[in-house]
Image (tube, rainbow, N blue to C red; front, side):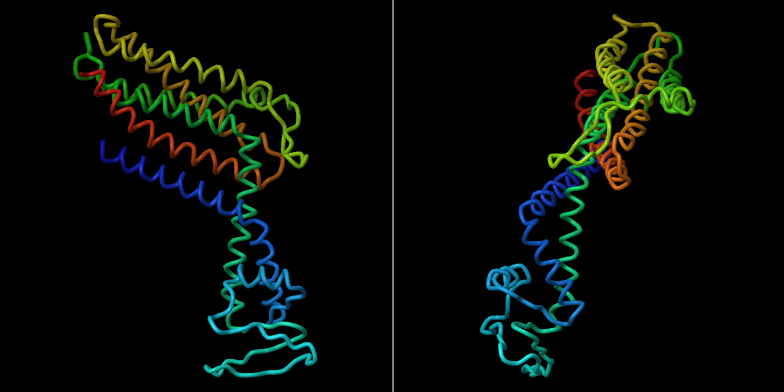
Amino acid sequence: MRLSSSVFFAIAVTILVVCFFAHYWTKKYKQQLTMAFFQAEYAESTGSVLLQSEAIKNSIQVELGGMEEGEEIIECPEEDEKEDENELGESIVFEDNVQVQETETSSKGKLCHLFSVFVEGSLVYREAFRCAWLPITAQFVNFIITLNLFPGVALSMQSSSLGDWLPVILVTVFNAGDTLGRLVQLSKGVANWIVTPVGEKIVSKSGDHLGNRRPKMKYTIVLPLVLRFAFYPLIIFCVNPEYIASDAAKIVIILLFAMSSGWVYSCCFMLGPELCKELKHKEAASLLLIVSTLLSLGIGSSVGIGIASAVNA
């Protein structure tokens, strides 16, 4: 269990670090990469790179990697088109003002296209998080609470009448309760109550309409999530027979603990995409919810090992 938790935690941290640096890098070089992308698109369509001003010329030299050492960009103001050969026998085509080798444009164009995708994707994910930050954050906290207490602490409970069967019953009850908490939303009436009514608009910094809030989130997500913190003392008290000795009480506590976990989980995944207006933001919000789940699985289970050790000490 310790090894699997460490692996989950390492994967989660790696994903978080990669996403952070990708976001920072694309935000910092957005304008330069966009310019390079359009220049590369022109190169692929015409077989050459046309530079119309000194400013663009300098930028494209930097963003597309520049020329080889000792090689200069050749200007041909008087000749519309001519051909020459370099030392490798590769054809160099010159048109209008300035040209570069054909062999370099394809790979650089693909690289710049990849960078532009990162830039656009970063913006989409920022806007999706702006809409669905509450379900994403709630999902993270929800699994942190769950894995802090189950199975490490919960299965440390001592039975007063069921003997060795208590851990088996608790695992069964937890899975049944978690499933039940998720299946409640299958009811059409419950689902409509969760996602309606539509609240005020969510706008981007530029004023674009990104989605609409849901006023009932404070009842469907926030309140159940806050109440779940009460399970920390309850389950820890169950471990010590001096406080809660009844096996029936322990089973009921685990059942409520599991049902609340399943309820919050389903509500977060239902409301996250619904808060967004456009399909691309809905998809991004769903992926952010998955990333939040993976992070909480790794961190929650790792911290849960420490809590279980402290409680059983």
